[in-house]
Length: 283
Image (cartoon, rainbow, N blue to C red):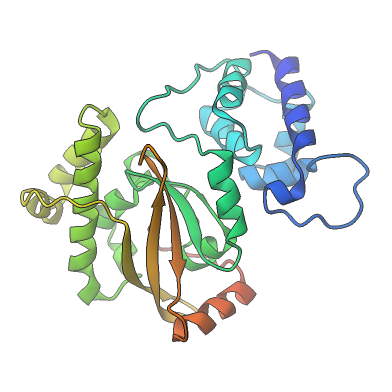
């Protein structure tokens, strides 16, 4: 770990970011350029004290998950991300299918969707980033580890996740999840993460195994979802997917039909802000 070089790199990357680049309110006059330390810490989901120690060259070696969070918070390019990992004494992530680096452009689009729930997910349904409205509607989706990072895995293995949807919608959702996963595996047949997810689900869920045996395949580009929320009630939203050129990452946007009850429900949700959820949530 090159502690001093890492600290200098973090300081310089923070200095070139403006609040508007990351969807942070500018607030009053700033004495120094760039984001404040606590703003980067908040974006990365870590304590301000821990981040401050990294910038001061006093912190412990950050983990891979911390570096990944800092990569997104500081809007690093792939080359900058790899440099950050090497400075911290870690091997840079492979640049192959399944790379979870989110581009600045995709994050900028996410930041601009302030009135609609939106998130960025991989083609294995792993949520990489989400906006405040998605937090409020679905709960925090980036906290999971292992196979549970995939919303598809949790849909078939965590009963709490299904409680957020009417029972009559479950069969349709299961079918759509399986079709989309088979399309991903067809596009990346040698990807070990995709194969591990499929094999785990076949072993743990008879429902998944039954759908998988049908060999139905379809990339999920749009749908309609009904979501139970503890405050605003049952909300019906359109679900649209914008994929990257490589098709391995997707910007997912939830929007209400014009004139529907969901319009006022989302307006109320924006006022209420983020709630604390105990259920699994999904993408």
